[in-house]
Length: 97
Image 1 (cartoon, rainbow, N blue to C red):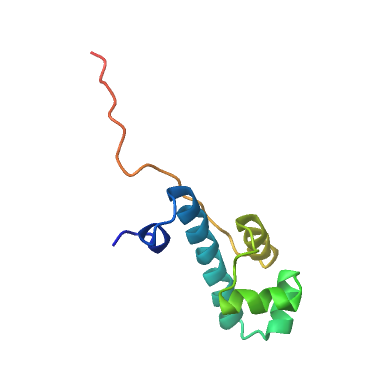
Image 2: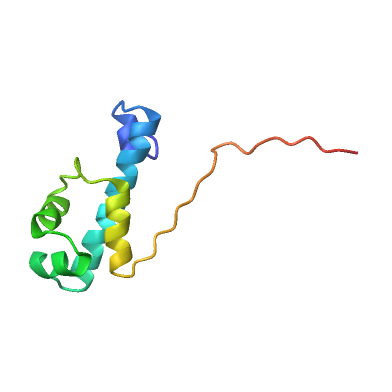
């Protein structure tokens, strides 16, 4: 098994990466809600979204929530998100003499 369960399930690399990003952000939203002891209604107010959106996140229904939307939710409550990009294999560089 790889690092991305969605890739293991047969999704394309691009779709697997997007799905994994959404799940990671949703987990952070859930952690914030739990850490702060928020009800779904209070979480909705804090994140600036309708309560049904919080319900969808808690249920894992992320199909209509974009990475950008989830990022904005986290930003509204002061959660900093760091994106790390890179390749799996280091690039070989020629050394000039």
